[in-house]
Image (cartoon, rainbow, N blue to C red):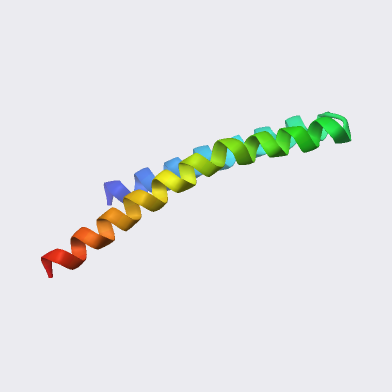
Amino acid sequence: MKSIALVLLWAALAWGQCAMCFRNAEAQSRARAEVFNKGILVLAIPLAAIAGVIAWLAYSRRARTI
């Protein structure tokens, strides 16, 4: 039960960050908004890669124990 509450809280915090990014990009000119979006992707790619590696390691270790 605690883990579900923690996941929901974490998701709510992440959603708040997305709204902040959206509002900040909306206030900028078109060229600056494109650069801002590229910056978000640059920051998201390493996190997605790390999450993928962790998921792959968890899956491969789970397969060995069965």
